[in-house]
Amino acid sequence: MSGDEAPSLFERITLPSIPKEVGRKISQLEQEFVRAEIEQLRKQIPVLRPLYARRNALVASKELQEADFWPRVFANAPQEIDEYILATDAAVIGQCLKNLTVERCDVDENGNGGDPRSVRFTFDFATGEENPYFTDAQLVKEFHYRTKVTKTPKGKRHVWEGYVSTPVRINWKKDQDLTKGLLDAACDLYEAEQKKGAGVDRTTLPEFEKLVTKLGEAEADALVGDDDEEADDENVPSGVSFFNWFGYRGNSVTAEESAKADKEEAERWQKIENGEKVDDDEDDEDDDDDDEDDDDIDEDEESLSTVEIFPAADDIAVTLAEEVWPNALKYYVQSYEVADDFDDEMDIEEFDDDEDDEEEEDEEDGEDRPAKKVKT
Image (tube, rainbow, N blue to C red):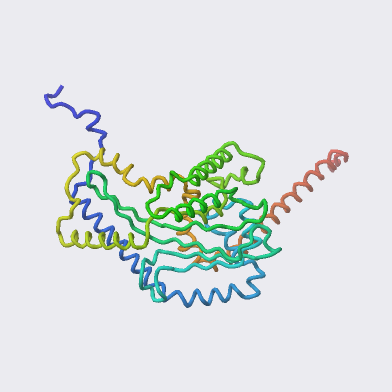
């Protein structure tokens, strides 16, 4: 053997780490990309606003209302949306949804103001006897993009960015609650927290325990299955109604807290761009310990995630705002093309079946008839 010792198995399989200075440059460039995308979105708002107004007028016309514009759009929506819609949800959308509007709610008509990523969804539904499911004529759900900065006991910064929202109650008619009480329980917890005031430990509230219990029951139903249609719907990852989406909260971050965090982050990145040293630049002696700290740095965030009734709601919101809303006309037109393709496939299958039937009849007739003599 050579005098040099071969590297150990651990040394051979350990992944190399990114040099700290390179990692800093990557983070800085990623941050600049994010800011550029936000500004691009901000500039699009005044340009697209009049076009969406014209489209809204077209959708409101008698011709498109009678043609079920938005139900057709949702029926042909991307997989990211479709996989969360149960058969019972599709029935509500197909029968009752009249209109949908999406607005960038934290900015003015010129795109100035807050974060342009914040969105407001306004769903208009049929009422009275035309809607056997709930009494609400309109449901409004807002997703505000917020930032929250906290620190671990060792002083390591933890930045959370994402959507926060207030749960929206739906007034279901008798025996029609597609969320099976989950949405009401989520709204009850939020209202109880508001009554107690800031700083309340939600885990001490009876509404929290009630929601945890209901979530456990929903998970058990999804695993065991029952006689309901939605239990057999293999296309739905969670097995819960799309209308749970209205109960999403995300995190507890006020507009004031977010504005303060945004200011701190902007100042920090400006220092980094100027080559200045920032407070959290020091190397951590034990990254594993810091990772453990990160798991426990925000008990409020952790408790809220425990009772989130639609964890993927923020992803759905992004898809609705950035894919379905701007491309609604395309999805509407495609819904007819899909129908035509389906009809063509049916015609071909029927034609093939007819040919098979004729061949079978010929074979049966051939067995009964004597064979023709061959002329010589």
